[in-house]
Length: 285
Image 1 (cartoon, rainbow, N blue to C red):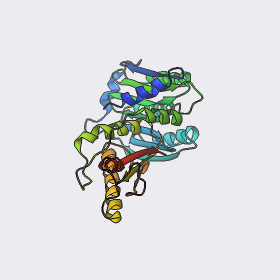
Image 2 (image 1 turned 90 degrees about the horizontal axis):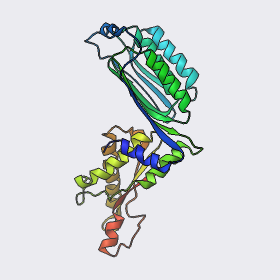
Image 3 (image 1 turned 120 degrees about the vertical axis):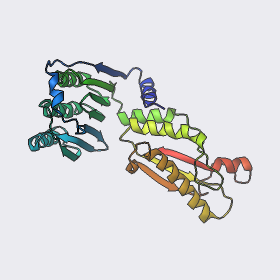
Image 4 (image 1 turned 90 degrees about the vertical axis):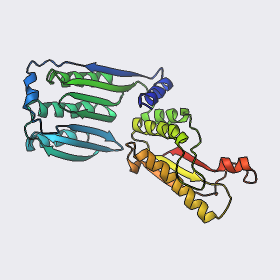
């Protein structure tokens, strides 16, 4: 399922509070597109920035030690409450535009929360949330002015004009997600394929609400040995977490537990009640 569906859910919840700001810019203002040819064809020249859960991650090709130092100074100034993690790779031949563009890209992301940006020799993509559309727009324009003409710049940003926090909006969106029962093969932690739709909805939500931690708890009915019930319920919850992690979610954002039959929601003396008690629960933390 595309992530855009979850963002649309959030937007519907805040019809009077927020709107989307999306744009695609196909041409910069520079005439020296030859700068792109300065990049070695053998080099995988890329740059990525993300902000989530109090961490700023910068990963990509650097032009020089001075370039890396400039990025770190900018991070210290505009992301002072974030833990900064970097992984730089020196470029073989990087065009003159690369240093200026990547620093402006970092400056642009300082106007967003839950932000992601990726840049290569042909494109820049920016996603995130902002409550200050004017500041963001001005920074995007400044970034645009610095680009060689052959680089495409695209943005996918949710603008929240409300006193409601983004975490609260995520909570409302989560409550609107329709989740079917996650089912497994009998006496197994192998997820049945029909449950993948539900897990994809959870994954898309986690991609859009990057500061949210999700608790995944497995439950069983009261049949059989309770030690086995706890073990199986924990294994099933872990299988769900593994499925979500394989689709790009940080495992540190997932809390996994198995409670066996200790928290029933129905009568264990009936077949229907036992079926209801065998379940996976998702909760935001």
